[in-house]
Length: 158
Image 1 (cartoon, rainbow, N blue to C red):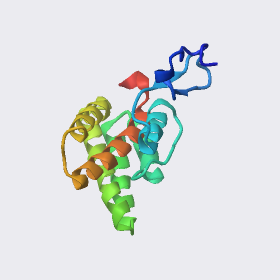
Image 2 (cartoon, helix red, strand yellow; image 1 turned 90 degrees about the vertical axis):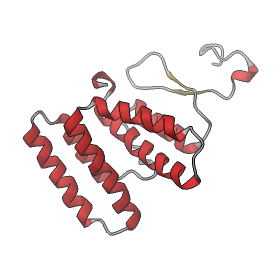
Image 3 (spheres, rainbow, N blue to C red; image 1 turned 180 degrees about the horizontal axis):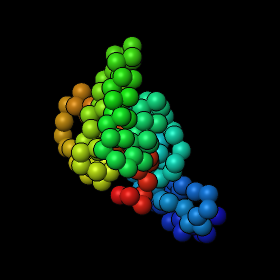
Image 4 (tube, helix red, strand yellow; image 1 turned 135 degrees about the horizontal axis):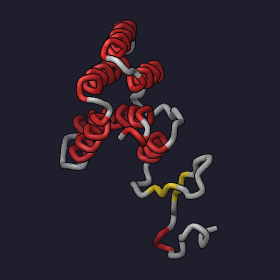
């Protein structure tokens, strides 16, 4: 099997590959071998809701509706629903994460779906710089939410 997928050198192991239904070639994972990074990779490349840390399924469903909205009016309705959902959250962590969703959703509505990829790339770059642990956790939360949003946007639209 290793030969079949071009993993012939010992230094190429371990190798992680994502096999998607309907595709003949797997997608290679080349990031760090960390749970969050691998889950983010799966979320980015599949339509599967993985439930990354800091992600809220209710808000991911709203993001999906926002991405599919054709008019500004439809987008505004979804954002209003997200704000109402945010006000109903009880846990402080959920409130913080919901707030990130709402802010990002407003940016998507204003700038278009390509904002998700642009913001993901920007935050990823910032997270790789030397920053405090608190800032790194903040970037990780935002990256996970953006990864979940990217899976909703779909690769054709980025």
